[in-house]
Length: 351
Image (cartoon, rainbow, N blue to C red):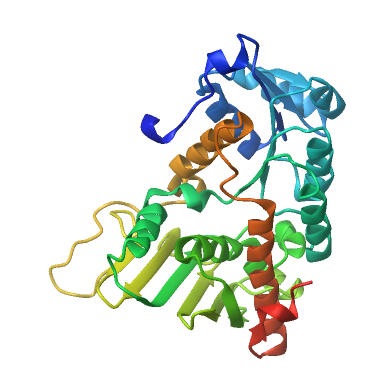
């Protein structure tokens, strides 16, 4: 559950008693999850679900007690906010259409299908005075938030080094991999975004590698299923990155900050998939997280609750398209480094 004090909601008095309509574009699992969150927000009185497949939208709407619409009907309803949970290939077109219509927009990552399209999209969005929030949910996780505050407050002293990792217990479907962008763009982009957010620093150089230890479809797509990288921040801080598509112990996402006075570890809870070899140590005591949806369920709800306040004009976007582009630049540098076997400066991939 997301604590109520962390969620500011639209007040009916601000809306003059009118209906506050939100549209969710995309009738898949994440879209329906967003519908469930929006239904809990005071002041959100009207919800539409639209999809590129109208029949799918109708079925999804019926399953959650909402109304369905075509994409054109959804935009024509003049909603107060749009949530884009459609396939990646539709993100850019839908986002541009929304900002040109003056509609506050939330969009799941990634911005677009590739770097060139993402850059054009960001430039177009920034031409319009319309708030856009991108879905990097870790910014709303309690652990990452506490780590950021501890660093800002000086509780751990001067940051000396960091370690971040994202390890999936099982790989995605084989058909997903060829169009995923690779492990650094698809998976580690969350690590890249959150390390920027927690530290307030930028990445200067990336030295990345990877290995193929699992199914052949990763290598066939030019991807890897095990990853490691060394990042140097603009102040010289070293960051190590690790990832896996085959973490047999369970879903493992952590961030470790080590400073001159202390440290903080994000994700080190009773469900962290670690087993101590030391005698008498029983931590952790609970089963591992099975997937990212369960691990970050409160964060997903909190980020969308925040968007309700963004759409109402009460708060600024907590994760802009420009933020998402900066994380993508790091991922691009990592993929280039892995391909060429050398350190890559961020200014080599920025345009």
